Length: 292
Ligand code: C2E
Ligand code: MG
Ligand code: MG
Ligand code: MG
Image (cartoon, rainbow, N blue to C red; front, side, top):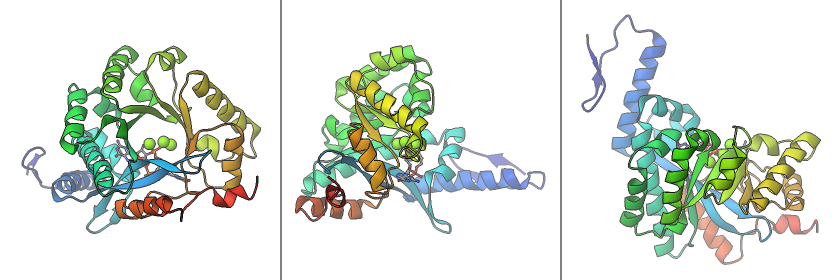
């Protein structure tokens, strides 16, 4: 019996391997196949400007269209991709696909929409990251301002000095940078001030009970104040109700994402939504305006 993982992937399940290891190996091989066979997809969730109600950007969220299991969410395969190092290939595919799609929407006159991608810590630390990003933009013929990179606090705070240099190079290219899930990790305020950031994304866990829970409200208020005093934009994740949206609007939050507007959807469906917005058929704040 032998097991080889790498360029030419094949594997035998030995009787000594436990069910968990077998399952893992099967999944890993499946994920390699997914990359080759084009089973990965990006779905797009709108980011809405709270004051205007307009969608001006979108977050690309990966899904795996598995031949047997159907649409698999990232939580079910990104951790394995990170453990096996496959995340570098997947991450580059995401980057290239998001740039291609953003350009396609411009060419098709859908809208000049900024597309945000999620970048894992490993990908952020990869040696040639800046040239990988630059060549993806060039190959897609996309202006850098239409690409946004979302990074977690742990990705950028780990070795903050090195991060500063990479972030500065990315920023000089013209791409936007935001901190994802803000408030769940730890951030050095000193570095937050020094990093060339554009936006903080308030984690969904603080938004969930923001209307009823004074502690959550205090944290959200503090993050918004912090962001604005550092001249950063701030966006709330996971907004599901009109009450949450109204509350965030009162606190001066700039943008929101969440099921109240829409979950992530296919590229085609997102394009339809943008077309509806273009002709005035879609306004996520229309239902809200009654309240003011
Ligand atoms: P994230 O970047 O914080 O993305 C937000 C997650 O919250 C998404 O889950 C989104 O579908 C979900 N969400 C959005 N609005 C709401 C809402 O109103 N209520 C609730 N309950 N959930 C909402 P998803 O798509 O399953 O992604 C989960 C995580 O997987 C992402 O968290 C991100 O960390 C990671 N991920 C997604 N795509 C990629 C990718 O291309 N590369 C990498 N490295 N990670 C990715
Ligand atoms: Mg994100
Ligand atoms: Mg997030
Ligand atoms: Mg989150």
